Length: 280
Image 1: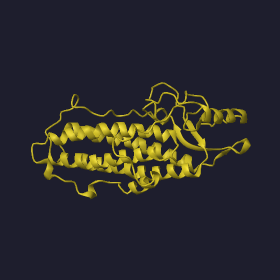
Image 2: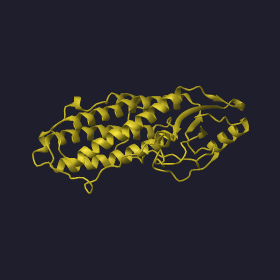
Image 3: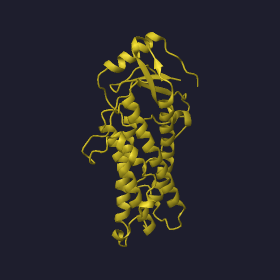
Image 4: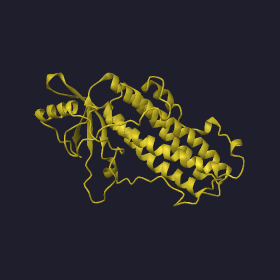
């Protein structure tokens, strides 16, 4: 899609609005749902250039990308295992593959934006592309909902189910920790990643609760089933997350999920996170 360049006066207005606008209602979804028949319009998010903010974003992406990839390989290994059993857990694994594969693409787009050259404006202002919004519509992606016992049978629950549920719970808890660490980092100002972290904390907290239900339904000794650390893939990303969050994440529940303000669509405006936006 073609980039529509803003005239300098509009660029300055966008920056002014991004800096001056007050807090508004936050939305708990980084992407609007796919709407068949509607135009696919992507939007580039901009932020005032900051080396510390760039470092926080790069560390976060460098950590979360392999972590998401680990969720895919763990889920695929489980789905390919003949010992899998629980219909509910199998549905969750399929949802993890679908949703986190899309989120990997979103994170890769963030990385490309961070590598893009900055936009230099009058009066010494410099904007850095930081994210691309609208990929659900552009890719016709339909998010898989978190499955529930109302739609899928819980059991029978096998030992392999318990093993996967416990390993993925550890994995999800790490993702929630990484998201909250980014939110707690004063250098982290990317509102798009803030909204994405709302999704991560919300979805993965729900999925952790669901997996604990599966473990509790096991008729054997669930306590005797302990996943080997090698079964929890992509945890090397936690090292990058420690840099992004200055080495520590708040304990679960000690901080609100990361929040940011989404501006009205199709306008070069930004929220209090210091973002302007550019449509393609």
